[in-house]
Image (cartoon, rainbow, N blue to C red):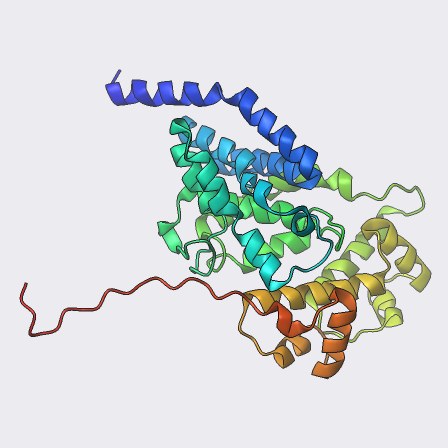
Length: 339
Protein backbone atom coordinates (compact mmCIF):
# COMPACT_ATOMS: atom_id res chain seq x y z
CA UNK A 1 0.00 0.00 0.00
CA UNK A 2 1.59 3.29 -1.09
CA UNK A 3 2.08 6.26 1.22
CA UNK A 4 -0.02 8.44 -1.12
CA UNK A 5 -2.91 5.94 -0.98
CA UNK A 6 -2.80 5.82 2.83
CA UNK A 7 -2.74 9.62 3.05
CA UNK A 8 -5.70 9.87 0.65
CA UNK A 9 -7.78 7.37 2.65
CA UNK A 10 -6.88 9.15 5.89
CA UNK A 11 -7.99 12.50 4.43
CA UNK A 12 -11.30 10.97 3.28
CA UNK A 13 -11.83 9.53 6.76
CA UNK A 14 -11.20 12.91 8.38
CA UNK A 15 -13.70 14.53 6.01
CA UNK A 16 -16.39 12.05 7.01
CA UNK A 17 -15.84 13.06 10.64
CA UNK A 18 -17.17 16.50 9.72
CA UNK A 19 -20.62 15.02 9.08
CA UNK A 20 -22.17 16.41 12.28
CA UNK A 21 -20.67 19.85 11.65
CA UNK A 22 -22.03 19.89 8.10
CA UNK A 23 -25.48 18.88 9.32
CA UNK A 24 -25.36 21.73 11.84
CA UNK A 25 -24.44 24.23 9.11
CA UNK A 26 -27.26 22.96 6.91
CA UNK A 27 -29.67 23.31 9.84
CA UNK A 28 -28.51 26.92 10.33
CA UNK A 29 -29.09 27.61 6.64
CA UNK A 30 -32.53 26.02 6.91
CA UNK A 31 -33.42 28.31 9.82
CA UNK A 32 -32.55 31.37 7.73
CA UNK A 33 -33.85 30.28 4.35
CA UNK A 34 -35.63 26.92 4.10
CA UNK A 35 -35.33 26.84 0.29
CA UNK A 36 -31.52 27.14 0.36
CA UNK A 37 -31.00 24.17 2.69
CA UNK A 38 -33.45 21.84 0.93
CA UNK A 39 -31.94 22.92 -2.39
CA UNK A 40 -28.45 21.99 -1.18
CA UNK A 41 -29.62 18.55 -0.03
CA UNK A 42 -31.18 17.84 -3.43
CA UNK A 43 -28.06 19.05 -5.25
CA UNK A 44 -25.93 16.81 -3.00
CA UNK A 45 -28.08 13.80 -3.98
CA UNK A 46 -27.73 14.63 -7.68
CA UNK A 47 -23.95 15.03 -7.65
CA UNK A 48 -23.62 11.46 -6.34
CA UNK A 49 -25.44 10.22 -9.45
CA UNK A 50 -23.27 12.34 -11.74
CA UNK A 51 -20.05 11.43 -9.92
CA UNK A 52 -20.77 7.73 -10.42
CA UNK A 53 -21.68 8.28 -14.08
CA UNK A 54 -18.41 10.15 -14.67
CA UNK A 55 -16.27 7.60 -12.84
CA UNK A 56 -15.04 9.77 -9.95
CA UNK A 57 -13.07 7.96 -7.25
CA UNK A 58 -14.23 7.70 -3.64
CA UNK A 59 -12.25 10.67 -2.31
CA UNK A 60 -13.27 12.98 -5.14
CA UNK A 61 -16.90 11.94 -4.69
CA UNK A 62 -16.73 12.62 -0.94
CA UNK A 63 -15.24 16.08 -1.53
CA UNK A 64 -17.88 16.89 -4.15
CA UNK A 65 -20.74 15.65 -1.97
CA UNK A 66 -19.64 17.88 0.92
CA UNK A 67 -19.16 20.82 -1.46
CA UNK A 68 -22.71 20.31 -2.75
CA UNK A 69 -24.10 20.51 0.78
CA UNK A 70 -22.13 23.71 1.38
CA UNK A 71 -22.10 25.37 -2.06
CA UNK A 72 -24.51 28.13 -0.99
CA UNK A 73 -23.02 28.74 2.47
CA UNK A 74 -21.86 32.17 1.28
CA UNK A 75 -25.50 33.27 1.14
CA UNK A 76 -25.32 33.56 4.92
CA UNK A 77 -23.83 37.03 4.25
CA UNK A 78 -26.59 38.08 1.81
CA UNK A 79 -29.18 40.41 3.41
CA UNK A 80 -32.63 38.91 4.03
CA UNK A 81 -34.24 41.55 1.80
CA UNK A 82 -32.22 40.21 -1.16
CA UNK A 83 -32.15 36.52 -0.26
CA UNK A 84 -35.92 36.24 0.23
CA UNK A 85 -37.02 38.70 -2.43
CA UNK A 86 -40.00 37.52 -4.51
CA UNK A 87 -39.10 38.72 -7.99
CA UNK A 88 -36.19 39.84 -10.17
CA UNK A 89 -33.24 41.48 -8.45
CA UNK A 90 -31.98 44.99 -9.18
CA UNK A 91 -28.42 45.40 -10.44
CA UNK A 92 -27.13 46.23 -6.95
CA UNK A 93 -29.01 43.26 -5.46
CA UNK A 94 -27.67 41.02 -8.22
CA UNK A 95 -24.11 42.13 -7.41
CA UNK A 96 -24.79 41.34 -3.74
CA UNK A 97 -26.01 37.84 -4.62
CA UNK A 98 -23.09 37.20 -6.98
CA UNK A 99 -20.66 37.55 -4.08
CA UNK A 100 -21.84 34.39 -2.35
CA UNK A 101 -19.39 31.94 -4.04
CA UNK A 102 -16.40 34.03 -2.91
CA UNK A 103 -17.87 34.46 0.58
CA UNK A 104 -18.35 30.68 0.79
CA UNK A 105 -14.78 30.14 -0.38
CA UNK A 106 -13.42 32.53 2.27
CA UNK A 107 -15.39 30.73 5.00
CA UNK A 108 -14.38 27.21 3.99
CA UNK A 109 -10.72 27.71 3.08
CA UNK A 110 -9.92 28.48 6.72
CA UNK A 111 -10.41 24.77 7.51
CA UNK A 112 -7.32 22.83 6.43
CA UNK A 113 -9.22 19.77 5.20
CA UNK A 114 -11.69 21.95 3.26
CA UNK A 115 -9.17 23.65 0.94
CA UNK A 116 -10.31 21.71 -2.14
CA UNK A 117 -13.98 21.96 -1.17
CA UNK A 118 -13.59 25.74 -0.90
CA UNK A 119 -12.30 25.88 -4.49
CA UNK A 120 -15.26 23.82 -5.77
CA UNK A 121 -17.65 26.19 -3.99
CA UNK A 122 -15.92 29.29 -5.37
CA UNK A 123 -16.34 28.18 -8.98
CA UNK A 124 -19.80 26.59 -9.06
CA UNK A 125 -21.24 29.58 -10.97
CA UNK A 126 -18.56 29.65 -13.66
CA UNK A 127 -19.72 28.88 -17.21
CA UNK A 128 -18.15 26.67 -19.86
CA UNK A 129 -18.04 29.69 -22.23
CA UNK A 130 -16.24 31.88 -19.67
CA UNK A 131 -19.17 34.22 -18.96
CA UNK A 132 -19.78 33.06 -15.41
CA UNK A 133 -18.53 34.40 -12.11
CA UNK A 134 -16.61 35.20 -9.93
CA UNK A 135 -13.42 34.64 -11.99
CA UNK A 136 -14.63 34.18 -15.56
CA UNK A 137 -12.97 30.76 -15.90
CA UNK A 138 -13.85 28.70 -18.97
CA UNK A 139 -13.71 25.11 -20.17
CA UNK A 140 -11.48 22.72 -18.28
CA UNK A 141 -9.93 25.59 -16.31
CA UNK A 142 -13.05 25.20 -14.15
CA UNK A 143 -12.57 22.36 -11.64
CA UNK A 144 -14.51 19.23 -12.67
CA UNK A 145 -16.39 19.18 -9.35
CA UNK A 146 -17.57 22.74 -9.95
CA UNK A 147 -18.74 21.81 -13.45
CA UNK A 148 -20.77 18.94 -11.97
CA UNK A 149 -22.18 21.23 -9.29
CA UNK A 150 -23.23 23.76 -11.94
CA UNK A 151 -25.44 21.22 -13.74
CA UNK A 152 -27.01 19.81 -10.57
CA UNK A 153 -27.55 23.31 -9.16
CA UNK A 154 -29.31 24.44 -12.36
CA UNK A 155 -31.56 21.38 -12.55
CA UNK A 156 -32.83 21.88 -9.02
CA UNK A 157 -33.28 25.63 -9.48
CA UNK A 158 -35.36 25.08 -12.62
CA UNK A 159 -37.45 22.24 -11.19
CA UNK A 160 -38.23 23.93 -7.86
CA UNK A 161 -41.16 26.32 -7.36
CA UNK A 162 -40.30 29.77 -6.10
CA UNK A 163 -42.54 32.55 -4.82
CA UNK A 164 -42.35 34.35 -8.17
CA UNK A 165 -42.58 31.39 -10.59
CA UNK A 166 -43.70 27.75 -10.71
CA UNK A 167 -41.33 24.86 -11.35
CA UNK A 168 -40.41 23.78 -14.88
CA UNK A 169 -41.51 20.37 -16.05
CA UNK A 170 -38.92 17.63 -16.47
CA UNK A 171 -39.12 17.91 -20.28
CA UNK A 172 -38.61 21.69 -20.30
CA UNK A 173 -35.69 21.46 -17.85
CA UNK A 174 -34.08 18.70 -19.90
CA UNK A 175 -34.26 20.87 -23.03
CA UNK A 176 -32.54 23.74 -21.16
CA UNK A 177 -29.65 21.48 -20.11
CA UNK A 178 -29.36 20.11 -23.64
CA UNK A 179 -29.57 23.58 -25.23
CA UNK A 180 -26.86 25.00 -22.94
CA UNK A 181 -24.42 22.10 -23.28
CA UNK A 182 -21.15 23.64 -24.43
CA UNK A 183 -22.40 27.13 -23.49
CA UNK A 184 -23.11 27.12 -19.76
CA UNK A 185 -22.25 23.50 -19.04
CA UNK A 186 -19.40 21.09 -19.67
CA UNK A 187 -20.69 18.92 -22.58
CA UNK A 188 -19.47 15.74 -20.89
CA UNK A 189 -21.29 16.53 -17.64
CA UNK A 190 -24.43 17.61 -19.50
CA UNK A 191 -24.37 14.35 -21.49
CA UNK A 192 -24.08 12.34 -18.26
CA UNK A 193 -27.05 14.24 -16.83
CA UNK A 194 -29.17 13.57 -19.91
CA UNK A 195 -28.20 9.89 -19.91
CA UNK A 196 -29.20 9.49 -16.24
CA UNK A 197 -32.09 11.95 -16.32
CA UNK A 198 -34.69 9.79 -14.58
CA UNK A 199 -32.33 9.09 -11.69
CA UNK A 200 -31.70 12.83 -11.28
CA UNK A 201 -35.26 14.13 -11.48
CA UNK A 202 -37.38 11.18 -10.37
CA UNK A 203 -37.80 12.67 -6.90
CA UNK A 204 -39.63 15.68 -8.36
CA UNK A 205 -42.44 13.63 -9.95
CA UNK A 206 -44.54 13.31 -6.80
CA UNK A 207 -44.05 16.99 -5.97
CA UNK A 208 -45.38 17.98 -9.40
CA UNK A 209 -48.60 15.98 -9.11
CA UNK A 210 -51.62 18.15 -8.22
CA UNK A 211 -53.33 17.24 -4.97
CA UNK A 212 -56.74 16.72 -6.56
CA UNK A 213 -58.73 13.72 -7.85
CA UNK A 214 -60.51 15.67 -10.61
CA UNK A 215 -58.13 15.16 -13.54
CA UNK A 216 -57.28 12.08 -15.52
CA UNK A 217 -53.75 11.33 -16.70
CA UNK A 218 -54.46 12.46 -20.27
CA UNK A 219 -55.62 15.90 -19.11
CA UNK A 220 -52.54 16.24 -16.93
CA UNK A 221 -50.25 15.21 -19.78
CA UNK A 222 -51.89 17.63 -22.22
CA UNK A 223 -51.67 20.45 -19.68
CA UNK A 224 -47.97 19.76 -19.19
CA UNK A 225 -47.60 19.93 -22.97
CA UNK A 226 -49.26 23.35 -22.84
CA UNK A 227 -46.71 24.43 -20.24
CA UNK A 228 -43.77 23.19 -22.33
CA UNK A 229 -45.19 24.90 -25.42
CA UNK A 230 -45.44 28.21 -23.55
CA UNK A 231 -41.84 27.89 -22.33
CA UNK A 232 -40.61 27.20 -25.88
CA UNK A 233 -42.82 29.81 -27.63
CA UNK A 234 -42.79 32.85 -25.37
CA UNK A 235 -43.04 35.21 -28.34
CA UNK A 236 -46.22 33.50 -29.58
CA UNK A 237 -49.46 35.48 -29.48
CA UNK A 238 -51.60 32.34 -29.30
CA UNK A 239 -54.96 32.88 -27.60
CA UNK A 240 -56.43 30.75 -24.82
CA UNK A 241 -59.06 29.15 -27.13
CA UNK A 242 -56.34 28.34 -29.70
CA UNK A 243 -54.10 26.92 -26.99
CA UNK A 244 -56.87 24.71 -25.62
CA UNK A 245 -57.80 23.47 -29.10
CA UNK A 246 -54.17 22.74 -30.03
CA UNK A 247 -53.80 20.43 -27.03
CA UNK A 248 -57.29 18.88 -27.10
CA UNK A 249 -58.60 20.47 -23.92
CA UNK A 250 -61.64 22.55 -23.15
CA UNK A 251 -60.86 26.08 -22.02
CA UNK A 252 -62.28 25.40 -18.57
CA UNK A 253 -60.25 22.18 -18.18
CA UNK A 254 -57.10 23.98 -19.27
CA UNK A 255 -57.64 26.83 -16.81
CA UNK A 256 -58.47 24.59 -13.85
CA UNK A 257 -55.86 21.90 -14.55
CA UNK A 258 -53.08 24.40 -15.26
CA UNK A 259 -53.74 26.20 -11.99
CA UNK A 260 -53.80 22.89 -10.11
CA UNK A 261 -50.46 21.86 -11.59
CA UNK A 262 -48.61 25.18 -11.46
CA UNK A 263 -50.45 27.22 -8.85
CA UNK A 264 -51.28 30.18 -11.13
CA UNK A 265 -53.72 30.91 -13.99
CA UNK A 266 -52.30 30.11 -17.42
CA UNK A 267 -52.38 33.77 -18.55
CA UNK A 268 -50.61 34.94 -15.39
CA UNK A 269 -48.04 32.19 -15.77
CA UNK A 270 -47.22 33.19 -19.35
CA UNK A 271 -46.90 36.86 -18.38
CA UNK A 272 -44.62 36.01 -15.44
CA UNK A 273 -42.59 33.64 -17.63
CA UNK A 274 -42.05 36.36 -20.24
CA UNK A 275 -41.04 38.93 -17.63
CA UNK A 276 -38.73 36.48 -15.85
CA UNK A 277 -37.06 35.62 -19.16
CA UNK A 278 -36.75 39.31 -20.01
CA UNK A 279 -35.14 40.01 -16.62
CA UNK A 280 -32.64 37.20 -17.17
CA UNK A 281 -31.75 38.47 -20.65
CA UNK A 282 -31.34 42.00 -19.32
CA UNK A 283 -28.96 40.73 -16.62
CA UNK A 284 -27.02 38.23 -18.72
CA UNK A 285 -26.86 39.63 -22.26
CA UNK A 286 -26.12 42.76 -24.26
CA UNK A 287 -29.29 42.51 -26.38
CA UNK A 288 -31.13 45.81 -26.96
CA UNK A 289 -34.34 46.25 -24.97
CA UNK A 290 -36.33 46.25 -28.23
CA UNK A 291 -34.91 42.84 -29.20
CA UNK A 292 -35.66 41.41 -25.73
CA UNK A 293 -39.20 42.79 -25.99
CA UNK A 294 -39.63 41.00 -29.33
CA UNK A 295 -38.28 37.73 -27.92
CA UNK A 296 -40.92 37.68 -25.19
CA UNK A 297 -43.84 38.55 -27.44
CA UNK A 298 -44.00 42.36 -27.49
CA UNK A 299 -43.75 44.16 -30.82
CA UNK A 300 -43.94 47.57 -29.13
CA UNK A 301 -40.97 48.17 -26.77
CA UNK A 302 -42.91 50.84 -24.87
CA UNK A 303 -45.73 48.38 -24.11
CA UNK A 304 -43.12 45.87 -22.99
CA UNK A 305 -41.45 48.46 -20.74
CA UNK A 306 -44.81 49.34 -19.17
CA UNK A 307 -45.68 45.65 -18.60
CA UNK A 308 -42.21 44.98 -17.21
CA UNK A 309 -42.49 47.86 -14.77
CA UNK A 310 -45.95 46.69 -13.62
CA UNK A 311 -44.58 43.21 -13.02
CA UNK A 312 -41.25 44.10 -11.38
CA UNK A 313 -41.66 47.68 -10.20
CA UNK A 314 -38.58 48.65 -12.23
CA UNK A 315 -37.71 49.90 -15.69
CA UNK A 316 -35.93 47.40 -17.98
CA UNK A 317 -32.79 49.56 -18.08
CA UNK A 318 -32.41 49.18 -14.31
CA UNK A 319 -31.66 45.47 -14.77
CA UNK A 320 -28.93 45.75 -17.37
CA UNK A 321 -26.41 42.98 -16.85
CA UNK A 322 -23.24 43.28 -14.78
CA UNK A 323 -20.21 43.15 -17.05
CA UNK A 324 -18.27 39.91 -16.79
CA UNK A 325 -14.69 40.15 -15.55
CA UNK A 326 -12.12 40.33 -18.35
CA UNK A 327 -8.95 38.31 -18.00
CA UNK A 328 -5.78 40.33 -18.28
CA UNK A 329 -3.88 39.65 -21.52
CA UNK A 330 -0.11 39.75 -21.29
CA UNK A 331 1.44 41.90 -24.07
CA UNK A 332 3.54 40.01 -26.58
CA UNK A 333 7.24 40.93 -26.62
CA UNK A 334 8.26 43.16 -29.51
CA UNK A 335 10.67 41.96 -32.15
CA UNK A 336 13.37 44.23 -30.68
CA UNK A 337 13.18 42.58 -27.24
CA UNK A 338 15.72 39.90 -26.50
CA UNK A 339 14.96 36.65 -24.73
